[in-house]
Length: 307
Ligand code: NAP
Image (cartoon, rainbow, N blue to C red; front, side, top):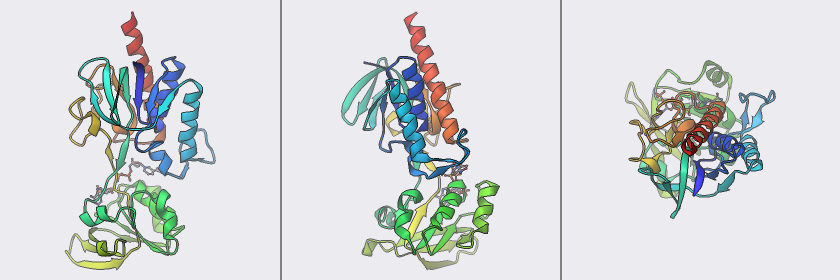
């Protein structure tokens, strides 16, 4: 029986682990299917306080993990695939093995969203990617397309110009969700072409087992045309990783955990931290802060039970 199990090992989970470990709760962190979370898929993080020259994302999250381990946090590889939060101790199914805990912090973050085209799903890893940092290198001198109109799309389009012969950024509207500075960088980059009011209807060529092009559609005129593409990068947001907790705690219509104030959820003793609940800020620093809050609340919850 554990005092606290933290599900997720991104910025939120690892920070919660530091605080819970320093409170002598010997937390167990279930690292999840994307250990390190979204920071492990980024390069330079320029806005995490304390690093005037920026910090490498994977290094940052790994250092937070090491910091928690120095205080006694334990990590297990694997994912929570089921849970019983109807009574305490809470029970978690970690890849088939059940563990019990007095308190639970859910810091499972959010994963990349896909367009949902059958051709897209068949070509993942063969030209279709949701991670520019991971896969950009493979498209040196090739034609690259990025989908999305948020900060991620802008950041990835800029990053991918290091590799591609051209980068075409496709967005379904003519207004961008991204911040001004990110849009300005994209507009100033001569290697990037912007296609607005445009969507992708099909990705070619499933029969060849590799991306060779796409069929695009102008959403205003309805015109369609084809364009050669080698690397197809999705940057259209994320989906919260709450499938294992569905029906156990209150989630909103998109699957995000509904906060009941501070780090609390609809179940006493279960706390949330990071992007699994936060659809607004979604920053490394806010996730870290949320991890801190969740651990402090879990500690208070457990301490109150002992008195
Ligand atoms: P986002 O802000 O939610 O933007 C997602 C984009 O994808 C939107 O432009 C959206 O279009 C588009 N989209 C969604 N579903 C689509 C679909 N099915 N087909 C076509 N397009 C679709 O997500 P994000 O860019 O990943 O950013 C998430 C958060 O992280 C934001 O708060 C952002 O500021 C932050 N972030 C910050 C930085 C940075 O500061 N360095 C870098 C990356 C991310 P619509 O606009 O039409 O809805």
